[in-house]
Image (cartoon, rainbow, N blue to C red; front, side, top):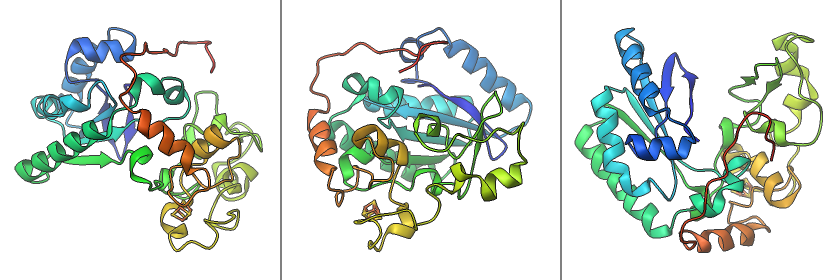
Length: 264
Ligand code: SF4
């Protein structure tokens, strides 16, 4: 849940709540100190540095501390990404789902920080799609902007797409990247709008959000081609509404951690 990686030439580091104890708890291992050291090395190396923070019930109220940590580390960008509930996030939903009130407080805090910081560092707020009734344009559209190459050479339209049924994901050892992007069945499966059925097919927003997230549609309905249930127009939206009403209700559920060899 605390991610690291590269994008646009930037190094990214994730932290939990802006302090060692909470960061290590959500990560399931002592990793905060290593992230802090890595952030220092990135700055020394003159590379852009981003802080990628997955927001959830346990850290949404610590937004001030998270932004202050980013300022102390000298980051260029802070991505405040509300947890998405598929894959391991779905397994941990009872522990991670915030309340509507928490989200409102965090939104207000982001607004205050934006005003105060004036865009440096940039604060990105990734919307909590369970609560707004609006589907997010996942990955900017399937096979539209980016791809993921896994360590074994598997190429995916998004990091979570391995959870979906359908055509086997192509491998960079078997095909050129050009063929994979342009012609592979996996990358064409949900590209554009032709695959959509109603309500997306006839919706004016279909070129803007591309029907939402395929992985979330599959995780919640068993059919990756359905409208993302996060959308208020989806016939399955009641599922998400019911979950959102539970937000913050459970006292404290234990985290289910991912470790090598464990599958969900
Ligand atoms: S119906 Fe489909 S295209 Fe329209 S807003 Fe909902 S997810 Fe987007």
